[in-house]
Length: 131
Image 1 (cartoon, helix red, strand yellow):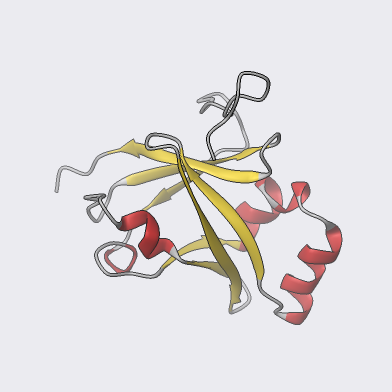
Image 2 (spheres, one colour):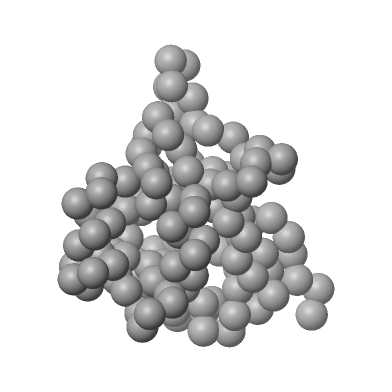
């Protein structure tokens, strides 16, 4: 859901230290269903905004959580299932819903940032790959 006049969508702030930059790999484009983010990035930039019960369940007991992901350019929100992938990474399942209509290429950079008012992870394409 896009923002309202009272609570507009949180815009990308290039100066924010909480931005998460992901350079897409071949496995995260095309027909992929997941995108991977490191535990360190999520702990520092996203988990601090989530209920501690959810974070503990995800990290210690491998209990998946749901998270809304908002495409800032198209104003479309999709819900992803976050699961632990080994000791260092988390996979966002449902990434294929974002890829529909997108033409991402290996090497493109996506930036994610937390939207405190809408309790979701916003994203937009930050840099295009020329390879």
